[in-house]
Length: 500
Image 1: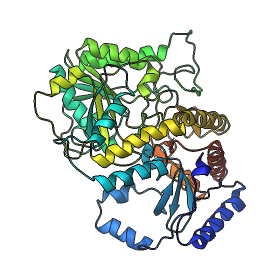
Image 2 (image 1 turned 90 degrees about the vertical axis):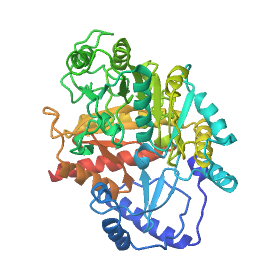
Image 3 (image 1 turned 120 degrees about the vertical axis):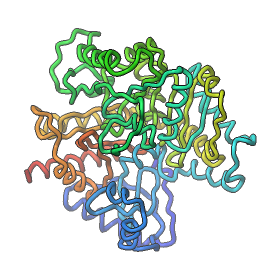
């Protein structure tokens, strides 16, 4: 499918082809693996120099952009198409991070691009004080992807905004204030959601997120309890397990920790529990199979609502289901989403029940840009494309292939501690050694990370200690792409081990 969609484009084909051949010949010559072909040719880059961009970045952009800039030698992106990115020098990269799990169906996917252009020519913006078809068509289409009673849609502009709104709605509906989330979680960077986010790197020394509490993350690899049958994943941990079928002792222990939080840290009545079906920024952490099911029950007994943060796991990325919560066999009271909802165009949403929506209608809620016509047209096209291109099935098939092969590397290399995930939501946790499970030091992570980039693949990093490689590509990648990455990753790890 991907190759059929590739078309030549751009005025200077010779420039691009020459750059491709030099870079890809270098990669093939030095480590004997060939980048999969792509017929698409990007436009020639003719804008500001790399030095100019870096200077502006240093002097005029938010200083944090320098802190979060990936790589010692940054990648200067010029153009994208499906699973591919090109830099300003014409080098092609296989994108396995998708702008942090955001490009769902492919960079500049032709169908989605056509929908955006069509809407731009008709109406860029109006607000929902007026009635326009684009918003209503999409709201109905999105709601159809949820089971009853999750049928009321609120549009926002980001995941942080969606989670912020969900916090407010939960507190108003329940009449309670305290909210519980998992350690290692990331739910946004706004003043309110910063309280839900449980990772020191995203915290500031000011009061934020009043009423937010954390419980121990049920991480069956890094946590104190875990076994080899805990996760809903093709790949389990290598930890020993003596549990009988259907009885997960690790789950019981982590639920015990949650009960301790109820007994010691919050009032008898709470507002909500927030949980990602699989932790994203936390490093693709998965929980014991029944953890969310038991947690939801305990939360509801205390008057709280249950909120599934699907910002990274939604829209078929886990492969087995359209929404990550469905893999846990639970029914949340609210679902928040963003990122892949519009393939990278700024958009988010909260979907909830009519009962909770009625509680929130006591005041006036208005969002100028939420449900923007262009955003809704793009998001609607994304839903169509997911179905037409079979991206959920691609996530299941290619993701399982990646997980299975990466597990073989884990068994071979001492510094690969854990491989986990579902579909194309994958984490590879790196350690000093398997016995200690101590995180691989930052300089070692950077060495491998940089090497992978230099061979033409872009991945991410995450985890509380930055110890986990994150693989969350556009859901249009092929098995051939996956095999190319596996060759690159194996070479990078092997090269580091030899040097160490």
